[in-house]
Image (cartoon, rainbow, N blue to C red; front, top):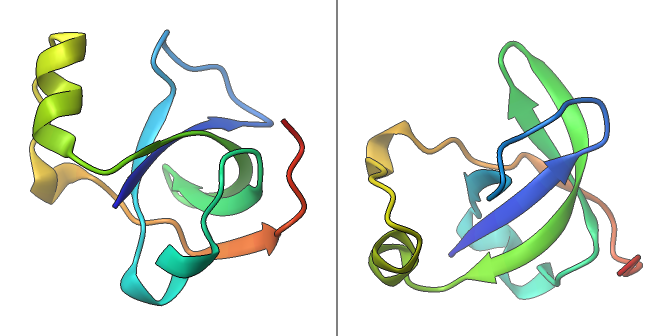
Length: 84
C-alpha cells in the first residue's frame, strides 16, 4: 500500500509526497490521519491525502514514472484521528 502525504513543514508538487506503508501499519491507515515520514535526513509529520492501492494504475493515471525501490516508508502513525 502507498499513500500521498502533505508534510506540515515543507512544500510539495501538485501530487504530494509518495510513501510506502509497512505491513504492520496497513490496518491503521486512513485518509486524514497524521503520520511520521522521512524527508531528507529528518522525520516530519504529514497528513495522508490519499491511499493508493495500485501504484502502476496511479502512475499511469497521473503520467508519472516512479521506481518502487526509490519510495521511502513512513515510520509511524502520530494520531489515528482524522483531520480531513
